[in-house]
Image 1 (cartoon, helix red, strand yellow):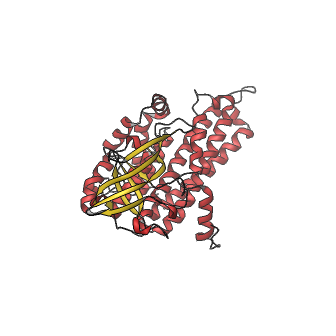
Image 2 (cartoon, rainbow, N blue to C red):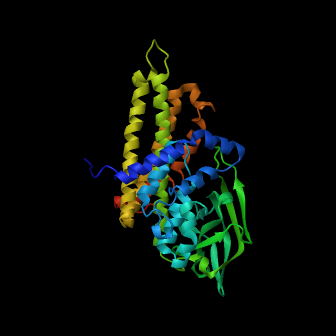
Image 3 (cartoon, helix red, strand yellow):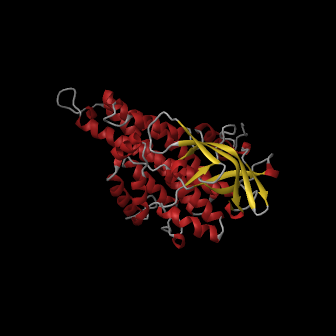
Length: 388
């Protein structure tokens, strides 16, 4: 008997298929690629060939015709297998969603099929050093020059630019430099003259790198603009709500992986007499709490995705923010408990949890800090006065 809290059979089958494929790669593959300075291209393209990367995109443009609920389930299963694909958050979720909802027919046919099968990887550039979480302070500007656009500005902490063919850049037009942000979204080829990047050294090992971008008089054709010039914020949030949902799903997958490893170890490790350490409440109770909090977080992102797929953008935004908060918390808590369950082994390279402990912390910071989510919930969900 199915209930409203059970995923449809198609999504369950999708999860099983993704888990099987991702399991052939796993944590060892990710660590090997990161250590060699290589990317997860083999896994990425195989996922694309199997239709997993574009499961949320319309069938007429090469996608699977599903929704954000399906794509987030794919990413969660990859992360649960120890092989999270960070660029899924960016390329098919953010960029794909924005182009499908805001782009012209020609733009959809030009870019979406490649996003769906993984042969086109598109990064996303919104964050600026002086703006932080305040997107209204974005200073990257676009100037109309005949039938072309000229972009100038900088972006920072932009993921995967070295493996992307283009970046969807959030700018403002020259005559909209002040006041509320009216975003103008441009697809910028990474080989465009005037476009350059500088890597940011991060404190954990991952195949995906972070970059600062420089746009110095980057000239673009008129049809590089996605959506309306000086468009409404809905154009931006067509991608930011999926970003939060996908971030939450990936964090939940990381937590599932860490919990699985910890439970396995707690069942096998024996210290006192012949009892495994998992028989002791000092080990068992923290793991049980993680399980409870994990299922809470998963329900939040599933509700957010269902609201987004139903076209309820405001409701999706509220729950996507809460899901992202809960996902970041459970990823950090689960990896911490997993390390503690393993004792000294939890900090060794062999067991692969120490690097994950640092990486999971990203879920509390990006793409928006948990404090800004608390501000959002206080203001929009509780009706409290704006505090910033």
